[in-house]
Image (cartoon, rainbow, N blue to C red; front, side, top):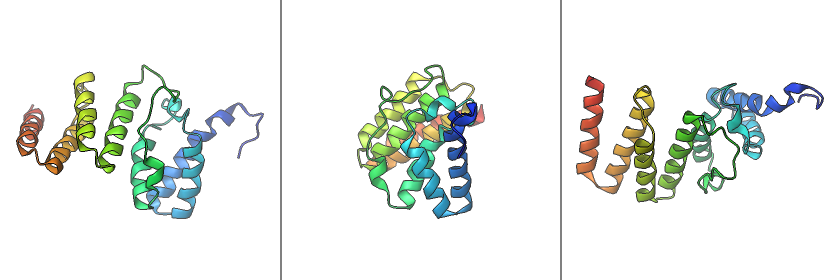
Amino acid sequence: DLPLTLPHKKWEIVLDYLCFEYYYSIGSNKAATQYFDKVNNNSSNLLLFNHIGIVSKFLTTKISFCYEFNKLDLISDTLNTDKMLLDVNDIHTQISIKVYNALVCFYQKKYKIAINYLNETLNEFVFKDYFHEFLNIKLSLVYFYIVVGEFEKAQASMKIITRRIRM
Protein backbone atom coordinates (compact mmCIF):
# COMPACT_ATOMS: atom_id res chain seq x y z
CA ASP A 1 0.00 0.00 0.00
CA LEU A 2 1.29 3.40 -0.98
CA PRO A 3 0.86 6.53 1.14
CA LEU A 4 -2.00 8.74 -0.03
CA THR A 5 0.33 11.70 -0.58
CA LEU A 6 2.42 10.04 -3.28
CA PRO A 7 1.56 10.96 -6.87
CA HIS A 8 1.99 7.28 -7.80
CA LYS A 9 -0.98 6.31 -5.63
CA LYS A 10 -3.24 6.56 -8.67
CA TRP A 11 -1.17 3.82 -10.33
CA GLU A 12 -1.74 1.40 -7.47
CA ILE A 13 -4.56 -0.32 -9.36
CA VAL A 14 -2.11 -1.14 -12.17
CA LEU A 15 0.37 -2.59 -9.66
CA ASP A 16 -2.46 -4.66 -8.15
CA TYR A 17 -3.40 -5.86 -11.63
CA LEU A 18 0.18 -6.86 -12.43
CA CYS A 19 0.42 -8.69 -9.08
CA PHE A 20 -2.83 -10.50 -9.88
CA GLU A 21 -1.53 -11.58 -13.30
CA TYR A 22 1.75 -12.74 -11.77
CA TYR A 23 0.24 -14.73 -8.92
CA TYR A 24 -2.41 -16.23 -11.18
CA SER A 25 0.23 -17.29 -13.71
CA ILE A 26 2.36 -19.07 -11.09
CA GLY A 27 -0.65 -20.73 -9.48
CA SER A 28 -0.62 -18.91 -6.15
CA ASN A 29 -4.38 -18.93 -5.73
CA LYS A 30 -4.64 -17.18 -2.36
CA ALA A 31 -2.57 -14.17 -3.43
CA ALA A 32 -4.23 -14.08 -6.87
CA THR A 33 -7.67 -14.00 -5.26
CA GLN A 34 -6.62 -11.18 -2.95
CA TYR A 35 -5.37 -9.03 -5.84
CA PHE A 36 -8.28 -10.02 -8.08
CA ASP A 37 -10.72 -8.67 -5.51
CA LYS A 38 -8.81 -5.39 -5.24
CA VAL A 39 -8.65 -4.92 -9.01
CA ASN A 40 -12.21 -6.04 -9.70
CA ASN A 41 -13.64 -3.67 -7.10
CA ASN A 42 -11.82 -0.70 -8.67
CA SER A 43 -12.01 -1.73 -12.32
CA SER A 44 -14.15 1.20 -13.51
CA ASN A 45 -11.05 3.29 -14.30
CA LEU A 46 -8.56 0.45 -14.85
CA LEU A 47 -8.75 0.70 -18.63
CA LEU A 48 -7.40 4.25 -18.55
CA PHE A 49 -3.97 2.88 -17.65
CA ASN A 50 -3.35 0.90 -20.83
CA HIS A 51 -0.31 3.12 -21.52
CA ILE A 52 1.43 1.72 -18.42
CA GLY A 53 0.66 -1.95 -19.02
CA ILE A 54 -1.79 -3.89 -21.14
CA VAL A 55 -4.47 -3.78 -18.47
CA SER A 56 -7.23 -4.64 -20.95
CA LYS A 57 -5.94 -8.22 -20.71
CA PHE A 58 -7.59 -8.25 -17.29
CA LEU A 59 -10.93 -8.74 -19.02
CA THR A 60 -10.00 -12.10 -20.54
CA THR A 61 -8.00 -13.21 -17.50
CA LYS A 62 -11.00 -12.33 -15.34
CA ILE A 63 -13.18 -14.78 -17.29
CA SER A 64 -10.70 -17.64 -16.99
CA PHE A 65 -10.07 -16.87 -13.30
CA CYS A 66 -13.78 -16.73 -12.46
CA TYR A 67 -14.47 -19.88 -14.45
CA GLU A 68 -11.64 -21.76 -12.74
CA PHE A 69 -12.66 -20.73 -9.22
CA ASN A 70 -16.46 -20.91 -9.71
CA LYS A 71 -17.02 -17.17 -9.37
CA LEU A 72 -19.27 -16.99 -12.41
CA ASP A 73 -21.53 -14.45 -10.72
CA LEU A 74 -18.73 -11.88 -11.18
CA ILE A 75 -18.89 -12.20 -14.97
CA SER A 76 -22.65 -12.29 -15.28
CA ASP A 77 -23.03 -8.93 -17.03
CA THR A 78 -21.59 -7.54 -20.22
CA LEU A 79 -19.59 -4.34 -19.92
CA ASN A 80 -21.36 -1.09 -20.57
CA THR A 81 -18.81 1.40 -21.85
CA ASP A 82 -20.98 4.28 -20.62
CA LYS A 83 -20.27 3.30 -17.01
CA MET A 84 -16.53 2.85 -17.47
CA LEU A 85 -13.77 5.36 -17.97
CA LEU A 86 -11.67 4.61 -21.04
CA ASP A 87 -9.78 6.30 -23.80
CA VAL A 88 -11.96 6.43 -26.91
CA ASN A 89 -8.84 6.43 -29.10
CA ASP A 90 -7.51 3.20 -27.58
CA ILE A 91 -8.60 0.67 -30.18
CA HIS A 92 -7.06 -2.31 -28.36
CA THR A 93 -9.20 -1.65 -25.31
CA GLN A 94 -12.37 -1.27 -27.39
CA ILE A 95 -11.66 -4.58 -29.13
CA SER A 96 -10.95 -6.25 -25.77
CA ILE A 97 -14.28 -5.03 -24.40
CA LYS A 98 -16.18 -6.45 -27.38
CA VAL A 99 -14.37 -9.80 -27.12
CA TYR A 100 -15.07 -9.85 -23.37
CA ASN A 101 -18.77 -9.20 -24.00
CA ALA A 102 -18.82 -12.01 -26.58
CA LEU A 103 -17.22 -14.44 -24.11
CA VAL A 104 -19.66 -13.44 -21.37
CA CYS A 105 -22.59 -14.09 -23.70
CA PHE A 106 -21.04 -17.40 -24.74
CA TYR A 107 -20.75 -18.58 -21.11
CA GLN A 108 -24.37 -17.51 -20.59
CA LYS A 109 -25.30 -19.72 -23.58
CA LYS A 110 -26.42 -16.70 -25.62
CA TYR A 111 -24.54 -17.94 -28.65
CA LYS A 112 -26.20 -15.76 -31.30
CA ILE A 113 -25.46 -12.58 -29.34
CA ALA A 114 -21.85 -13.70 -28.85
CA ILE A 115 -21.50 -14.32 -32.59
CA ASN A 116 -22.99 -10.88 -33.27
CA TYR A 117 -20.44 -9.22 -30.96
CA LEU A 118 -17.54 -10.87 -32.78
CA ASN A 119 -18.92 -10.12 -36.24
CA GLU A 120 -19.56 -6.53 -35.21
CA THR A 121 -15.96 -6.28 -34.01
CA LEU A 122 -14.62 -7.63 -37.30
CA ASN A 123 -16.76 -5.18 -39.26
CA GLU A 124 -16.04 -2.15 -37.09
CA PHE A 125 -12.25 -2.34 -36.86
CA VAL A 126 -9.52 -2.80 -39.46
CA PHE A 127 -7.17 -5.63 -38.52
CA LYS A 128 -4.65 -5.09 -41.29
CA ASP A 129 -1.76 -4.59 -38.87
CA TYR A 130 -3.17 -6.74 -36.05
CA PHE A 131 -3.03 -10.24 -37.46
CA HIS A 132 -2.91 -12.05 -34.12
CA GLU A 133 -5.98 -10.25 -32.83
CA PHE A 134 -7.78 -10.97 -36.09
CA LEU A 135 -6.82 -14.63 -35.79
CA ASN A 136 -7.99 -14.78 -32.17
CA ILE A 137 -11.39 -13.32 -33.04
CA LYS A 138 -11.86 -15.44 -36.16
CA LEU A 139 -10.95 -18.69 -34.37
CA SER A 140 -13.34 -17.81 -31.56
CA LEU A 141 -16.00 -17.16 -34.17
CA VAL A 142 -15.32 -20.55 -35.80
CA TYR A 143 -15.68 -22.24 -32.41
CA PHE A 144 -18.94 -20.41 -31.72
CA TYR A 145 -20.28 -21.46 -35.14
CA ILE A 146 -19.38 -25.09 -34.43
CA VAL A 147 -21.14 -24.97 -31.05
CA VAL A 148 -24.26 -23.54 -32.68
CA GLY A 149 -24.08 -26.11 -35.48
CA GLU A 150 -23.52 -23.71 -38.37
CA PHE A 151 -20.76 -25.72 -39.99
CA GLU A 152 -20.92 -23.94 -43.35
CA LYS A 153 -20.17 -20.59 -41.74
CA ALA A 154 -17.38 -22.18 -39.70
CA GLN A 155 -15.86 -23.63 -42.85
CA ALA A 156 -16.11 -20.28 -44.65
CA SER A 157 -14.38 -18.56 -41.73
CA MET A 158 -11.63 -21.18 -41.78
CA LYS A 159 -11.08 -20.51 -45.49
CA ILE A 160 -10.67 -16.81 -44.74
CA ILE A 161 -8.18 -17.63 -41.99
CA THR A 162 -6.23 -19.97 -44.28
CA ARG A 163 -6.14 -17.38 -47.05
CA ARG A 164 -4.96 -14.70 -44.64
CA ILE A 165 -2.20 -16.97 -43.28
CA ARG A 166 -0.94 -17.68 -46.79
CA MET A 167 -0.72 -13.97 -47.53
